[in-house]
Image (cartoon, rainbow, N blue to C red; front, side, top):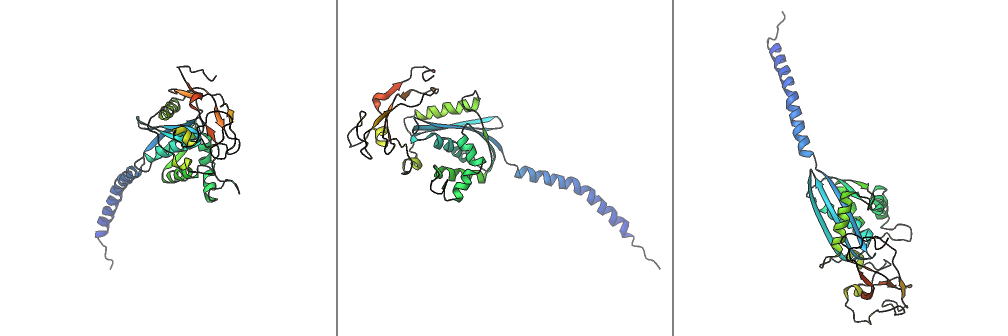
Length: 276
């Protein structure tokens, strides 16, 4: 005698019903999970520089997210163009509260190539040596930047400088404005690196020194007692908000230190083509 389990059709219908209801519930759960794991997409525009190089420096950054924008800038007593380009991106990424997908826009090939071509990672793997005998400059900033790049999802994009790009031009103006601030920050990583050449004499910039004042060509370098010579900087376009420039400086051919003189300082009177 065959015994039929009359519960089977009922169980089958219940199973099918659960299967039908499972799909929307699953999709809903999946959608919720997607929303929770989605990270913000942010555009970071940066620029930085020093005038002269090395000299007073600054950076400007713009953070943009869904139509909201914030601007930041900071000036430094003594630094270089490349350090300010790196610092701009570092400071921008440090403003983010959580992990983000970031598009960085910069006119610095040094910055872009250092990350995108893997140079910085190679230098770090080689204990910050570019070659067997040559140390990589700005290792302190490259190391900070690599840490932020690993934490966020960052993609770098190069833009041509001084070519009408609105955000790049604004960042350039912010960086120039930062250089003119009264309260400038000390770029400790640069000033205390003894192996960096072309270092501007810090005491000359601050105006505080117990040594004889450097006044003219032939005066002895404070560091190595070599007679100084006059050098004229390369011609450059005047930046927006720039108030002065140095027509010349004194240069030590031995240790490559630069000395800026107050009498070489020239005030800019709204003449954008001064260096054309």
